[in-house]
Length: 233
Image (cartoon, rainbow, N blue to C red; front, side, top):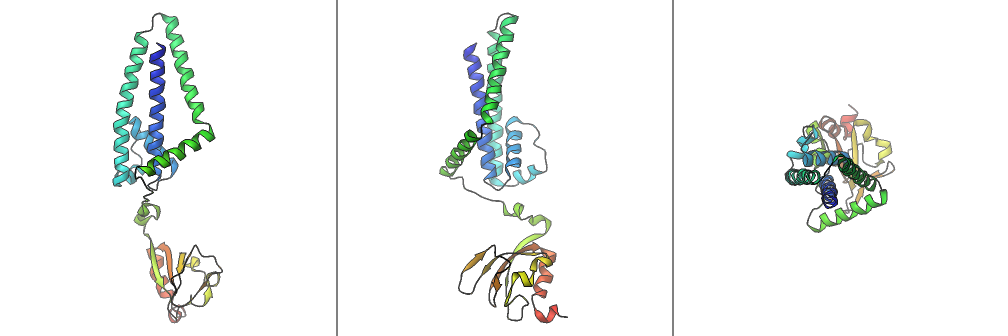
């Protein structure tokens, strides 16, 4: 009986570890931890995989493969756990032993839950999982269409600053492109130097190339607004 209980708890621990590996792998593709964790649990245990975020998973080749493996391993793990439970209670004789077995099983599950709440252990486990995934070729492959909300009309574009531009020769804090719904992500200077996440005190010169982010409807007038003669009209 004790051997069967230990085997059941080992299966439970391994199952939770597999789910955490799957969640970490999904997060490395660009999903948030909450979404990645929920999708990993849903796929492994075969429940609740009908949320809107699931579309972002099944439409992404790498995420779809991770979910497929979680579903397969989940079916194997649940089948093994069920078989172990049956064997455990077949060996039990008498009502007293049933309660003893249930009590030991309950304590074992509580112990696993408490282990999972140890912050230092979680950090070490996550670090080990990340390192392991990177060694087998799992890199950070972000879904930029999802992150940038491309389907909602937002995009990243480049804009070269001409001499007649209202941006030329002034600081970003003075031209204030954000007021037009445009965020300047970076500036490539004429000498090839790149300034990422420029501050409002960064000066924009003629010939600079701005990396901008915003809605398509804001980018179109922004290109017209960038010329002094049109902005004054």
